[in-house]
Amino acid sequence: MKLGSVEHKELFCRSFTESYREYEPEYLPCPDLDDTALTSLRSIPLRKKVDTERQAGVIVSRYAATVSTPLLQTAIALPTFELLPKLETVERASA
Image (cartoon, rainbow, N blue to C red):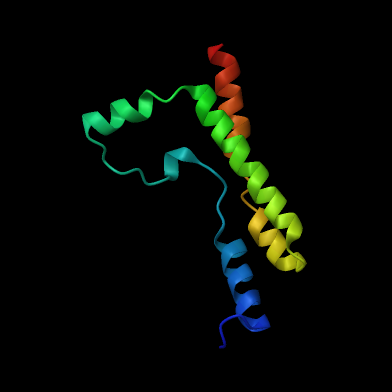
């Protein structure tokens, strides 16, 4: 299969969309973090985490809109940050 060919693109998109799993934090592997790393991670304000996810979602959505192939567009936009609504719910509850 030639890289960049239509077949390659279709295989990529099919593999990506078929292997996609919805965000379920309890099933995501998490590395063991030492106390320093945990402290650093916990020190990031929730607002900053939500803003970062929102900004990333906008960037991915904008990029997906520039792709002319519908199959590739769908594969790129598929996971478009389903974490954001969950973070916003937590943020509202902690306010």
